[in-house]
Length: 587
Image (cartoon, rainbow, N blue to C red; front, top):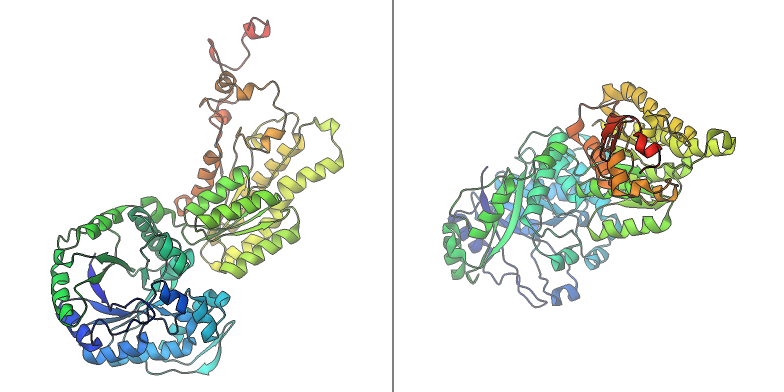
């Protein structure tokens, strides 16, 4: 790990603030270079709103023009846009400006990019605010093509080029792109399309202003760095990923570099306060005792994240059918907590709305729809919406299921059809929609079906239901073998008794399964299952930790599958029969 500091040119807040209050730009940059800083950065607000300025916002220079000026005023200093708003510019113009600065500076540009957050600026520039993410992604596609110096064509939603050639080639191949922001989309771009990530420090107020999730703790920072690195590695990228993290140090004399910079900058009017930016390539602890104590504590947290790195879930996309209540809700929230972007359909409109609000409040990027997953058109609409929003699919979890209790001779074909549609046919439709999309990504993926222990044993009163779930198990085994060469895994999770609102609607005899003694008799682990027991299995099967598992079933059943008819009778212990005293009515 290497740790370097970048000095950010201070901006003066307020509508009347002069952009050069900190001193002549070339003098500040020269002093920064002499002080030993690795680079200097400038931000961008081409036409800030008056309300934002009144609330503490600031004016800026044009960052690209100013960095071109600084290229001539310095010899070694790296030149960073912190950050340029990619959607503000035609990507071909952005690519040309960046290549020019890199060429004139001898290969010193770092292009820090963000999606932008000020609606008033987007409006003034004639850019559709709601299209900013699509515009950003197109820019990331165009930049390397432009910088190659070779003939290329490009066709996107907003930009089109046919057989063009761009010069000059930048000196760096490629110019490093660092992505700013804390959102899942920002992390995805950093991991898959860039050379660095710039998480934004600050609390809820800054999060609201900049329209990016808050990054409030060192643990969160460590986890997200681990997620970005894991995703980068899973995408086959082997180069180190730079991470830039900003901190405000009101006591610069703790750092030798800070002292030098502060003395020089006071002579140019900076007022003795500096904003250092630590840059590291690996999230591990630093023992550099020249660092401010607060930053040392933050870096010490960087060694966390074994699961995040190995699971490689962050930034992936999952479709979950029946994901708003009971088992489904637990699965969705646990996947989202691990960085997965969920697309959910559920027949319960109220539960879907509640889940949507919960995920939004937690800052998760999610798509929640109300509809019946048994309807192929509803499923198609969900998969199409996920395509449009994220352009990829990694995981599918088929949760939808249901039954009623009746002996087979008391049921009719209409009931059989309903049970098959609910428990089997919808799985076929979901997999038929999922496989081509996962296959197109070329990364492999995971399909997980929620079945039941009743698929593995006799189930009096549930003959068709258990047959449908057993059909899902056999379908999964066959599909797993067919898709294995492409790295697409298919597995099942077969729980036993897990109390949920839907399960409570079924009759359960005399209530023995709500009695602690009855539970201990029936379940070896001595307690009912919980939704987290099932969702944990799904998270595992969706993750790279289960990369060598396919065509199999996990059984979160408390041991009932293993006990297979043996019961833990009070005062008698384990027996595969009912003790006589219970039969005689003595108990």
